[in-house]
Length: 444
Image (cartoon, rainbow, N blue to C red; front, side, top):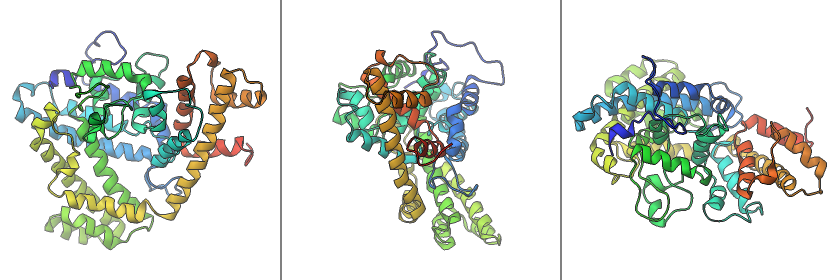
C-alpha cells in the first residue's frame, strides 16, 4: 500500500478532488470539525460506555470516551508518522505528523458513532430481536446477515456516509483517508470463511446499503483486497492505531470508572498500574495523599506508557501492516501484553458484571425489542396497506418520520433499515422514555 493513496483527501461522494483548504485548516481538520458538530456525535453524550444512565457526572459516557480515544489516537498517529518517515523516507513529506495525527484522531472521534443505546448490550438486543422476528423473512444473503449480526461499526459507516446530511451522496463526505482509518473491519457481513480470518475479519464494517460506497473508498485508497469471492479487504494501516487507542482507553478508563463506582478497591487498581510505572513515578504517586487523584496520576502515566508501547509494536510489524500479512491487535504485541490484558480481566470480573450494569442492560433488551416491534410493525403495515391497527400505525409513524415517506416504494431491506436507523440513533434516555410512552407506562 502507498501513503500517497492512503492519505487521500478525496471526499467520498464528491466527483472531483477538493481544492486545498486554506492554511492552517487542513482537509483532515475540517473532517474533525464536521464530526464534532454533527448531531450523531452529540447524541453520544447520553449513550452508555459502562454504566448505563449513570447519575454520577464523573462516569464516562460514549461522548467522553470518544474524546479520550481521539486524544490518545492523535498521539499514536503523530508518533507513527515518525515511524513511517524512518521506514520509508520517501513519504516523509506526505505522512506529516500533524496530518497523520489528525486522521487517526478524527477516526477515533467517530469510532462509536453507530452504537445503539445501552452499548454492546444494545447490539445484542437488535440481533436477538431479528433472530426471532419474521421481519427479515424475505431477505437473503448479506442483507439478512446485516440484521442478524447487527454491528455498531457498520452502522457507524452508514451514519457517516448515508444518514448524516442525507440525501447527499456520501453523507458527510469525509475524506477517504479518515473513512478508511475509521473502518476497522473492512468486509461485508457475508463473506468466505477464510476472509473472516485475522482481527480485521472478526466483524463486518459496512452494510449492503453502503457496499458500493465502500468499494469506491477502497479503490481510492488502494486497499488490498483479500483472496476470495466476497467483498473483503485488508485494513488501512492507520486503522490499527484507532483500535489501539480504543483498547488503551477502555482497558484503563473502564477500570477507573469501576473504582469510582466502588466496584473495585484502590489496592486492585494500583496493582494493575504498577508494571507501567517506573520506581520514580511510583514514588511520586505515593506522595499524593488523595487516593482518587493518585489513581488519576497512575492512569496518565500508564496511558503514556501504553501509547509508546503500541507505537513500538507498529514499528516492529510495519512491513506486515503495509503488505496485509499482519492482522492482529497491536496491543497484543506490546511488551507488557499480559499486564495490559489484566485490566480487561478485572473489568469483566468486577465492573461489567456489576449489578447496576446488568440490571440496566436487561432493561435495554426489553426497551430495544419493544421499540423494534412497534416501529418495524408500523412501517410494514403502512407499506403493505394493512387495515389492521391503521390509526396506531399512523400515530407511530408520526413519531418516527420527520417528512412524508413513500414506504410502499421501499424494499423490505430498506424498510427494516429505516427502523434500525431510528432505534440505533436514540440515546439511552430517549429510548427508555419513548418505550414507556408508547406502552402507556408513562405520559408526557
